[in-house]
Length: 146
Image 1 (cartoon, rainbow, N blue to C red):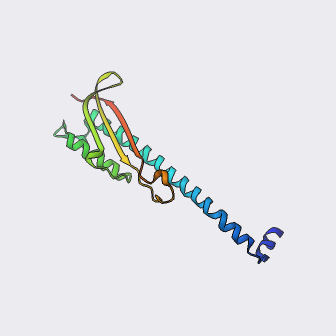
Image 2: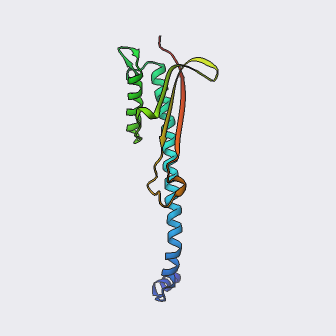
Image 3: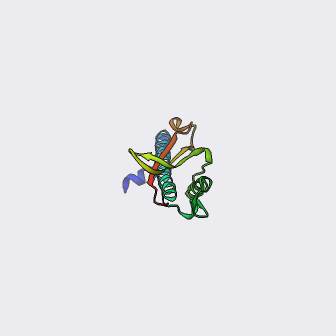
């Protein structure tokens, strides 16, 4: 407790200078940790979106069909809407789908590949993320529908 009292009574300014010198690197490390966490979260969301899109196409869910038949446009729309609910903005150019492809040497799969350019909120300070690393996710699901 006496350390706190002496700190409060100290009027020399050395403590303020030390705080100013150390606070900037500590805050940059803290913000870098937050941005890394956001990027990791975005990658996780992309993996979930790709898996959900491939599953939707493979089992012919209502979001990926028109009148019960596979529809590429409906599938892309489903993936875009699913991503938007998680805060990831995608366009058709970010999505590659195939409803009859080979995955791991086996045929009869639906596949989805999603790409997203991560944008940091601190590009001036975190230069490694300034240009936005490109995150990708790919998923396959066996076709169940007729």
